[in-house]
Length: 353
Figure 1 (cartoon, rainbow, N blue to C red):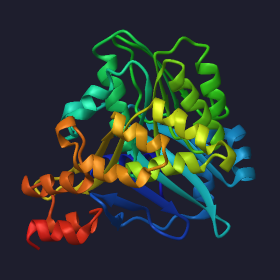
Figure 2: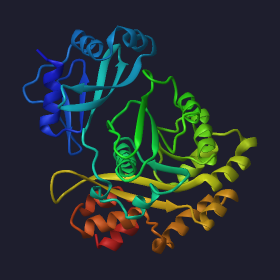
Figure 3: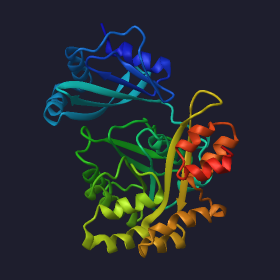
Figure 4: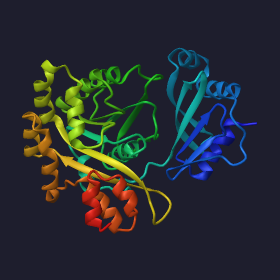
């Protein structure tokens, strides 16, 4: 018989980043990007799935789950670890996805990120975005950036998360973490209230709709440092996504606002290391120089990749240059690198493949 606590302990002990519980299948663990069934485990029944969800969220949120058919939340295992969980319905049965979250926030300089990122936490105001697909390390990068501030200076930091992933303990800074559903109804609502709470830095888990995006840009305009994420793959796509979320008649105004408030876009891809167990990110870094701001304001977004390419001395880097560095340093294999490159043929030629 499957027991939830034992399954969560198995996820931690195996080093799996994710666990999937799907009715009719044994538990599936993702270990260093590979998905495999848990050895010797029984298939999950619908009754077990219902009991697991109810055990984690209680009767009140269970009613909401049955109505919405989807819910995000976090859960913990007796001090051994924390998990970000999504429970949902599929083919009239329940499925769950668990993402393991370390209790220890990694130091920013341990993540193998470009040096320019460490300087972004010292900005007094503006909008900094970390982008990438699901599982690309966005939350870890943001948590490490926040903790770098926390360990070095006195600031008031408010995070709005869905759900809270890393638990950040106040050190030199004061940190308040608010979770959607239990502490605040929406990102946009949380942002509006946060502005009345004297914050220095606001972390918004995701700019997922017009109301949240508008509130985040407004907060950055009014003298706060705002950190957030988008599920986009590069800086140009990120800027276009933000502008396109607005009605056509507002887009010129938004371009002007964004050109003044955006400070940087970090776009990440996560690789399984070949030199040792673990993951390592490759990043495109766009910093908002006057040239970039002009491109945003004048709707010349297509010119931004060339600016990144020619501004390496300022700390910018293309994704493919970052990937190439990982290959040269023996962290990532050539085939994996080429498969995730922005320009695979050009990178293959550069690497001699």
